[in-house]
Image 1 (cartoon, rainbow, N blue to C red):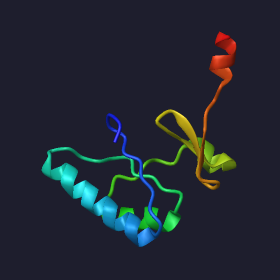
Image 2: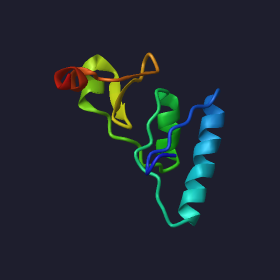
Image 3: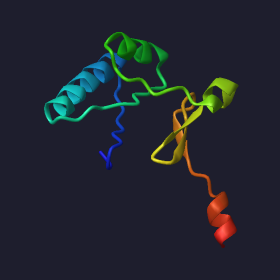
Image 4: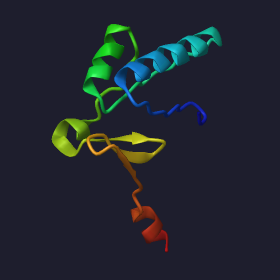
Length: 94
């Protein structure tokens, strides 16, 4: 967990649902709400919606087919399930 972002991965959709329910309950007991749930598994996203999770709004770039969203300011290619770093700013600095 970093500041207010929690990132994890699970081997199965069922494990992901169970851990997300558990994590949500722990945070709720601490008086905090976990929001912006997102997954590269559309079925899991549907299960979360059915359980009342605050699902992350689909980024416009995802709907345009580039299948990426931001995670800790890194681009997450959801279909390929990989993180990429935009080095343009670093190159401009150099």
